Image (cartoon, rainbow, N blue to C red; front, side, top):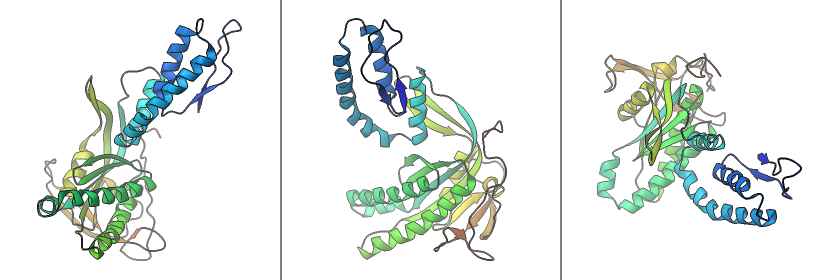
Length: 299
């Protein structure tokens, strides 16, 4: 919590309270400081607090409505920029792991079934995937039609999340089948490498986006992945210590690549001990090797 003292010296009227704001409320703090500086000599402090409280309650529903529309990272970057009175968000270079999911045959599904019912199922499906991503320290960056894009700092978190997603989707599809509904064949791919996190667009409409080879490659791999498995790139594979569960290794030329791309297909194994992989020995929890901080080697 950030607390703003409301007096600057002994001659300045003192408000009887401290005004606290979380990082999710930058606009309120900014407005408060401006109004206080302009009105401190002429406004009753108690009335000022009441007016600000009413303004906050008026804006809160809008904030709550907007919050689910913005990625978590973007939300806090916007908050930090507002706290510092900056109009531009920072451009960050970092090593990150990108996950893409895609539903095979979704277009045909939409053409042959009631649209509203399919979209209701899709929202339930995305709620399930989002929860798993967050549980594995990831951030859902975008929903792209029937696909999801997520950002992870730790490659092992991303691969375990991918495995858990395929397990959960299997159970989800079983529930759908029990109700006589359709199921979603989920393709999932992951790549790790250097990306740029930035705000781009026009002055009146901007978007928080990720740019870089891992974004393109993960997206293209997800179009080719085998439903029910996790495809990982060489960049992700090299950063994993535990590599049990390799089902196959193949190469093909992705649309975003000039040279053949090496891809590993993982078949997921789950049980009481959590997510692991099919392979020699017992299921294992993944570990990551090497630095997974930003491009400059920090963190």
